[in-house]
Image (cartoon, rainbow, N blue to C red; front, side, top):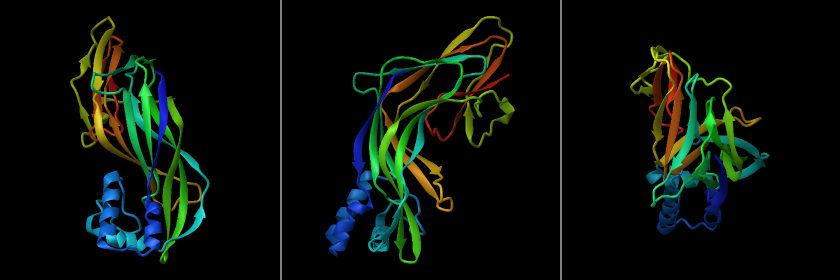
Length: 280
């Protein structure tokens, strides 16, 4: 499957507010505009050093007040980190091929809004596809590789790490040498984390079978990945992505006879994925 990736530009971070903060523009109108801008971007922001920024709301004034006098101590080198946006799982002793399905009102594309920890600068990206299929015997993860830069600030008595998303390095596909999900037994499925579908019992058959499953389109699906930066292991840093996919994926499977197959899915749906497979 041929994939093209386009960097759609920057999403403003807290740094874009700082010139106004330096001028002391703390009017109700300024706070309203600042809140509107941050809420419009809808970053999946987590708690940063005890400041509850999730949802912003009445905490916006306190949040900005905490950061308005921050001082940059150090800008770390750029790092590249992957964000998985699709997983294709293949039953043991079977194959799978992936195809995009598009209707007249949608584009064959996946769009991202990418964010780092602490309301740093974000990034927009877009993936487009040709209607071709991959036939695989191994499970695979489809990735966007993102450039990030950690910035260390002095905020009152604390040191705070902000993660800027500064660019898109590229896209990648990684095959699993051994998938941690496929090939396990049904009794190993944790019902608190996964849901199952009807099994396919070909244990007493002698011919190959084929079946098709769908990976449905998603809108504003939030994903968050914890990441490690050398020298900053004590900091809780994350990359977050808000993803929208305007099309449906079709996965065509072939199953070897003489086995029982059980499909199952993560209840979270993150990242989007085809069914995972136990084999008996």
